[in-house]
Image 1 (spheres, chains in turn cyan, purple):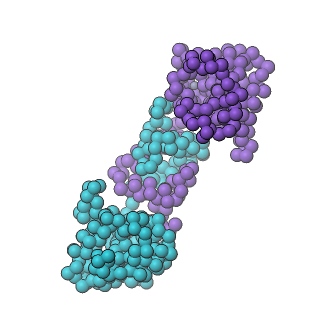
Image 2 (tube, chains in turn green, cyan):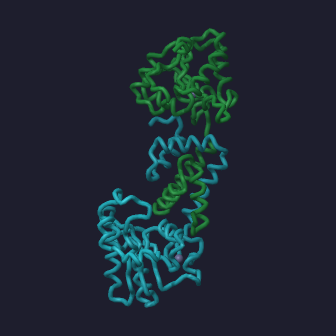
Image 3 (cartoon, chains in turn green, cyan):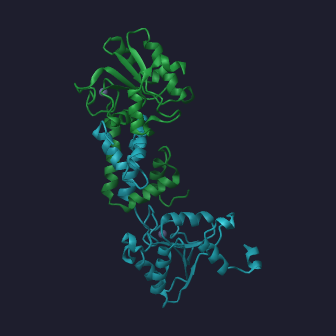
Length: 205
Length: 205
Ligand SMILES: [Zn+2]
Ligand SMILES: [Zn+2]
């Protein structure tokens, strides 16, 4: 792609580094910005700079939060004995949206995936095991996407905490095999939490 | 969509104002940025701010350019008697890419579209008519998209310049090279029959 302007080329190149945004789409988006009032682009740029510079993760559950402890962790009405283990903050949003869950979350920040070079040390697993060791957690609900990587991650965590006095369960396989959690409709997802099964039982299937 | 962070929500809302970027896609893109080194987001934000703040359009052809006159308009090897009228700078890039055209361009910046509230006064038509009035232009090639709006725009410009000594042409409409006839829309196909060329002439191209 030959550009008539270095400024334009630079903006298109930066935009096209985002996943799923090719050069053509990036050009379309930048040309759109050029047709809009300049304040709109400045606000977008400021919002991105600000979220990247000031991003904070909840000290306890690792969810994105503007406060040291997130709203869920600091809500006394939530059941702190029940922890739903998820991959990503989008999964927290998806489960919260079902209104079926009143416990807390633990955001791993990914799943074990040797193919992508992601090992247990890259995930928030140590802090989860420490929570279990305090004895204050009664049950862990594994709510990873039902993929091989999700299963591997569940099993890795299970082995770390199986000697402690904590129940484990996985969300019911109402979630279609191979589907990402965040794309599952809320009724199915809510149901799958209510119908959760003991983790050891899930290994037999 | 319920966010656990105002900073995140703000960034997602700004991103999702871009055309074709929904809330889910915007969230996916912002979460990607949060996983990358922060410099990457800062560079993107700076590139967008800079292109929007410092954008310049060629004084003559209205193409995006970092200089007062763009590289094409200031190239003495280009034929300034021949002007290709296009809607958008992407069309300049597309035609340049063919290496078939050695004249200059005139970028209208859109097409007449009453449905979208775009009238002739919103486009760079006056400067085009002024160029024709100087008598230095021998031919205008209308290279608008073959849509009703494109045709309307062509015709509007044609009426403004028809009393001056300038030839006008439109790019040939036809079946695209490599396309199956049966998948070509009927208007194009019909047009391609009306505009048929002597077989011997077609062999020369
Ligand atoms: Zn939290
Ligand atoms: Zn120019």
